[in-house]
Length: 433
Image 1 (tube, rainbow, N blue to C red):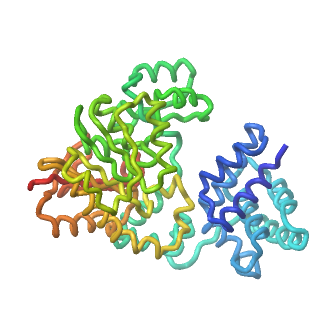
Image 2: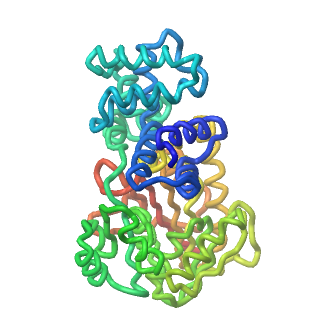
């Protein structure tokens, strides 16, 4: 039987060396190795936990190491992260076990050093230290780089930036959208009650259900197409798009397909949806998902959203541009996003505006265009829309309302500290000429 701590260390090293996505590495490892359920849970908690809390852990390690964290070899550094994570965040693991198991993971040359660091931390009462500067302290506390905190502050002000950062933690449960083509919320509730599975509905709609149980307890509901994974903000985006039965709809950056699926359900599987993506291999996720959900109106196409497709000009009633973005609204789910070079973010608004301008050509007269991102950054959100409308008098902003969600100038930002949703931005516009 494989050792879950050893596997967590191997995954951390692989993530650091090769830039492996945590979700892909996690799934690949669980499929590859033989682990008992309890060990799968431990491996998952350790691997994802260390990635999520890396800035916090590295700061604590620095207090007990004569060498800077970046000067340590990759095996020793990540073993220390695992050890400190267990001591700080996993109170069900005895200290002696956390220390001995961590030391066993280390290269022989560094075992004494790692043992000394961990035991010194324990002798100090496992006191978690923070920098004197309050902004840097917030970074260590939330494990969010100062560069990202600065983006939040520039976009929304200091107070909101702090609230966003402090809310950036994994939410309990998995949010699922009920597939109305095969079932309804009442039937799903009955199934969950019969199985004694804990759940709750999101206030936005009874079509959304958050399940707090191992996915194995309801995997058949996903496999048989009764539900699919979709956050409430993504669901709201398709409700704001509001496609109707019989319409022609373009999902310009569709993969993995959730918004296409949700749109097809709203359309009662009548009409046509063209789901595009730059990478042909990703489109299989859309075709497989549509088949599982019993959706027949989705047609996939390999297409670069930045490049004009003459056949699409003014052909669509609704166009959705869910553009590539920095993903700062979903860091709680995908913690590796936090550690990407900040320079990558600076180039995104130009690409996003290019996609929006190109895809706007595909909207019919009177048709509507929705722009969305899963980030919290005014440069990628409001400023892109302002630039687009300032240079394109063929479109006007469209106000929208959905439950308690109400737009301003046709725009709305889902704030994770206010709503049970990912950080998300939606803007709606209409072609007037």
